Amino acid sequence: MKTLLIRAEDKNPWERRAPLVPKDLKEVVKKTGVEAYLQKSEKRFFPEDDYVSAGPKFVMT
Image (tube, rainbow, N blue to C red; front, side):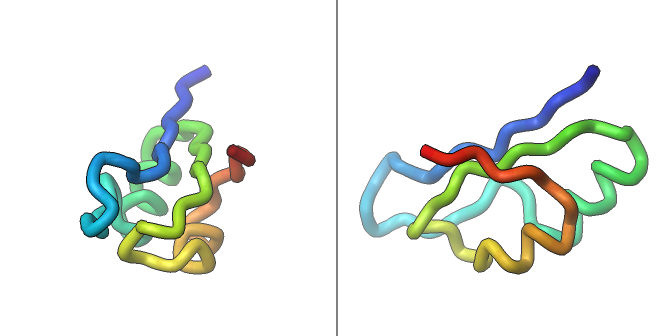
């Protein structure tokens, strides 16, 4: 099974970025059937609710 982990941002406290935006994540999950996991992060640019609609499972950290 293919899996994808979007890990929490932790490089610099002032950075706010995301490796995949929710819209793109939703498309990747739909097209590839990958099982996506998302670590909670206070620093991520997009709110977690936006990712929830894209379908990943959460990983508690």
